[in-house]
Every structure is written in structure tokens, then in C-alpha cells.
Image 1 (cartoon, rainbow, N blue to C red):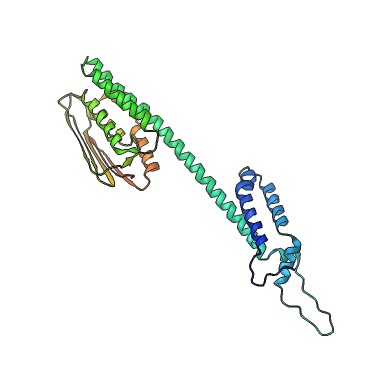
Image 2: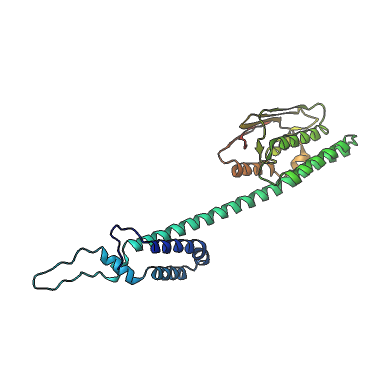
Amino acid sequence: MFHNPGGQLDVIFQVHLLIFFYLNYYFFVDKFYFTKKYVLYAIVIVAVIIVSFPVTDAIVFGLNDLPAPIEHEGHHKHHDRPSLLLVFMNKKLYLFLFVFVASLFLRIRQHLKVIQQEKTTSELSFLKAQINPHFLFNTLNSIYSLSLQKSDDAPQAIVKLSSMMRYVLKETKDDYVALDSELNYLRDYVELQKLRIDKKVKFKFDIERNGTEQKIAPLILIPFIENAFKYGVNSEENSSISIKVNVNQKQLFLYIHNNKVKNMFAENLSTNLGIENTRKRLDLLYPGKYELNISDLEKEFIVNLSLQLND
């Protein structure tokens, strides 16, 4: 006879629960629930419970919890035997139902987590694919300008472009790269742009660096700098660009200010993807860890970015 005076489950029943949990988590949910075979899924679950939870055992368990038999004068002893439904509605069935719901919930949550990770990875890959051609387009545009001027600086510009392309192709495959590599990339880009801008342009570029071994998302800063050169340089107007990067142990601060001048060539060819993509990448890679303020005024454009760095 089954004995359960303390209300504790026997070892065999615990094994049944464990097997049921893993079967549902790793097999039944994937095979039936995610494929929308809900009726078949319900039938399978009920069948497994019946096999793991024999009716005879259920009756014994149910009767074990019944009050002692009542004797009536002139009548024989008898039990008030519960119906089959009441027998099943006991502690064991509740535990099976709990395990079923828990395994289903955990499997669905894990499935959604994987989908979100895949979506994030896909979005980041797409955004990077947009950023890289955008960078290449603007850099080639700079070299094209030097070529039109028959400048002797064109070969140096090609060397800078080669260094930048090597960085983009080899070091930006991961979500985060060494901050020093990213800052060197910015320096190369700025040096390349300085080769083509007129000496009349007021230009200032400073990097203050404290701390070591920080990491940053690759190409996360360059769109703002690209934008400053694209819309802030015109030799026929009062052009001014100021770029400052300040890094401490935990945060990076980027400040950019440029006058807005007419540049029909840039306006006609601009894809307007850089800053918008950067906003999306910041949301994906630095949720709650950055603050971006952009002032797009009539005659000037100002960017203030505060970014919490990764170790």
C-alpha cells in the first residue's frame, strides 16, 4: 500500500516529475506548441500524465487523505469514495500541472530570448553594413576632391584610407573594440579631412585620454565627425569645426560644434544614414548607458554625447 503520512512525494514520483519537465521543455514544446499543433500537444500532455500518474495510484493517494470511515448504527462500515475527477484533483495532479506550466513558461521565455538576440545581431549587422559603405563613400569623396586639385597630398590620403579600411575590415567584426583603436581611426580620418579643407577653415581637434583597456562599439563616433566635415566646410564662407573627445576611467564625452554652411555637393550625395544609424546602435549596444543631445540650429550644429564605457 502507498504510504504518505507526511505529504512528501516518494522518489519514483519525483523522478516522474523530472522526466516530465525535461520532456516538455526540450521536446514537446518545440514539436507541438511552436508548430501550433495545440490539440495534439494537449493530447500528448494528458497521455503522459496518465501514464506517469496511474489511476490506481491516484485512488490510493486520494483515499489516504480521506477522513476515517464513519460507522452508523445498524449499518456496515463504508468509505465515501470520491469520483474519478475528485481523485485526480489531489496534490500529485497539482504538481504535474505546476511542472507543466513552469516548463512551458521557461521554454517560451528562452525561445523569445534567442529570437531577440538573433534580431539584435541581425540589426547590428545591417547597420554596420550601411555604415561601412557610408564611410567609404565620404572618404573617396575627399580623395576625389584632392585629385581635382591635383594635390601632392593625394598619395598620403590613399595611405590613410588604406589604414582606415584595414581597421574597418579586420577590427570591427565584434560589437566592441579597444578604445585606442577607435581613437586612432578618428585621428586618421581627421588627418585625411585636413588634407582637403582650406586653411581658412577654423579647425580644432583634441583628445584627452585617461584610463586603460576600455572598449567601445566600433564606428560609433565617426558619423558625428563625418557630419561636421560634410556640412561645416565651405571655403567661401566662415567655416569653423571644433571636436573634443574626453575620456576618463568610465565615460567618454564627445563634443562637436560646426557652423552650417552651404555645400551643394554634400547635400546632393548625402545618404543621411550616419547619425540615424548611430542612434539605433546606441539604443542596442548602450541601453540606458548614454546621453545624446543634438542641437540642429539655423547656423550651427552641436553634438554632446556622454557614453558609459565597457571594461
